[in-house]
Image 1: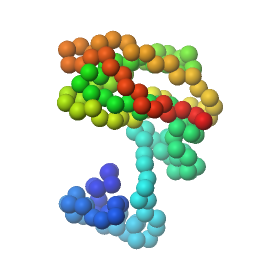
Image 2 (image 1 turned 60 degrees about the vertical axis):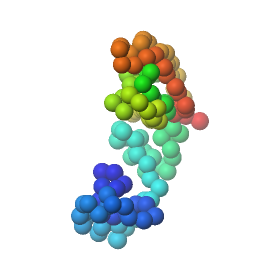
Image 3 (image 1 turned 90 degrees about the horizontal axis):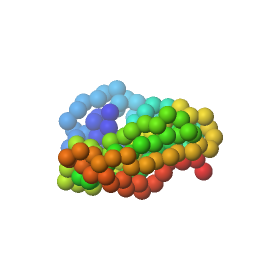
Amino acid sequence: MGWQDCSVSFWIKSTEFNKRNHTPNMEGLAKEGKKFTYAYSTPVYSPTRISLLTGMNPSHHGVTKGIAIVSGPDAGIIEYRIDNGKTKTLNLLTKWSSSLHLPWYLILADGLQSAKHKLEVKISSINGNVGGNACRIIHFLVNK
């Protein structure tokens, strides 16, 4: 559920999307408890859970590794591995990449031990007829 998918506004004002759905349980929770207006989550559960418990960003608590990228129509395929483990591939081209360069946060691994980890990334190949071989990494999500 996104921040505009319920009748409770999680922004400074209500939006048209907040008016589309009637969510009385969410309204009750918002009245009785805490309402997080500046929250975030990750595409996998464990980093979000640990972040809520510790108050730390996923890039700092050591159980998740990822990259922040900008993906456009020339996006390629990368190969990566963590701690000399099995090499995996990831297609950076998305269905929204055909005409826009959009930012994405990609989780490469979760459930890791809280420690320093080695991440190796390389551009593996040209992405067929619809992509290219670009890999624009803006930020690495790593331990500090």
